[in-house]
Image (tube, rainbow, N blue to C red; front, side, top):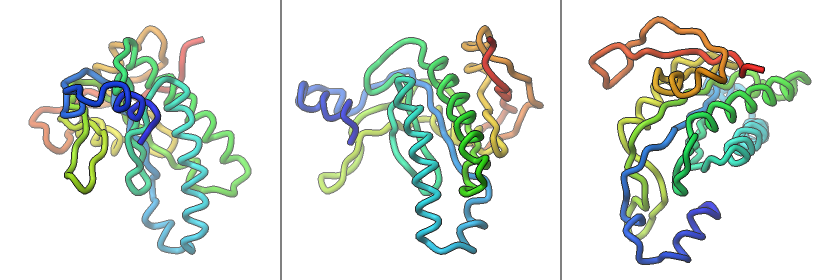
Amino acid sequence: MSQEVLDMILSHPEDSWLKGIRSEVTVLFTDIRGFTTFSETKNPEEVVENLNEYFEIVTQFIIEYGGYVDKLIGDAVLGIFGAPIPHTGHAEKAVRAAVAMQKKLREKSGDNRNPFLSRIGIGINSGVVLSGNIGSKNKMEYTVIGDSVNVASRINNLAGPGEIIVSKGIYEETKDIVLAKALPPQKIKGKGELVEVYQVLDLKS
């Protein structure tokens, strides 16, 4: 587990947060477009080496901008801003992290050694989640669950290689600092109504 979660467990072992508390956070998902097709034609050692370089860059910027790396899921990364340690401005921090990591990924992909780095899509959403230790007596981990996490994952599916797609709520929170364009409302799984989304192009100078 992360150092943040370990510190909280050691400092407050009996606290109820370990059993789950509601909190408002920003959820950031990344994954690789075309990962399955690529991995089918490469040896496992090459796939793992390329994956680890991608994970290193993404997790570095999540942590640098105050986020928590919740988990790695295949070729996806789930980052949380605003938990386990609550703080304000988590939407802005997540967007700044996303822009920074995409710039770094583009820079590192210039040598053409790692095809993954130019094919990362990012999705971001905010909302209330249940955060805490989830699992069984044999296997337990700190994580977040809730509709906001699911929506972030679906929004991430809309992002093409090198793109950052955010929910309307994220855009409203960060429109003073980002250059973005509205996309057509999208139908996403689990939602009866179309969802408004925006593509973040860059940060304003």
